[in-house]
Amino acid sequence: MNQKPSNIIYGVDDLPPFSTLFFLAFQHAVLALVFIVYPLMLVAEVHGTQHEAEGIVTAGFLAVAITSLSVALIRQYANKVVIDKQKEKERIYLRFEP
Image (cartoon, rainbow, N blue to C red):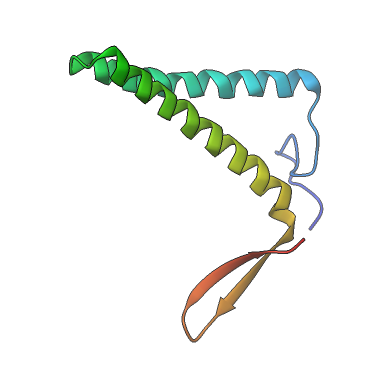
């Protein structure tokens, strides 16, 4: 199952060229900024203070940073995830193995 379908450009283990990675990083940054602008529009609409706007922007950047780091770390260990399924309790547990 190591072969990728013919309609997929890059597989999971492939490394795209730098130009593609740069464009995707730029796209990610622009998308992150969009989600910072929405809360600012909300603060302006409810006549919030500058202090409240700063707090919301800070929280937004922290949320984007934590999400980006968690996705990167999960991707690093994604190949080492073991799924434990206990049928008697009908729960699925994910365990990371080094």
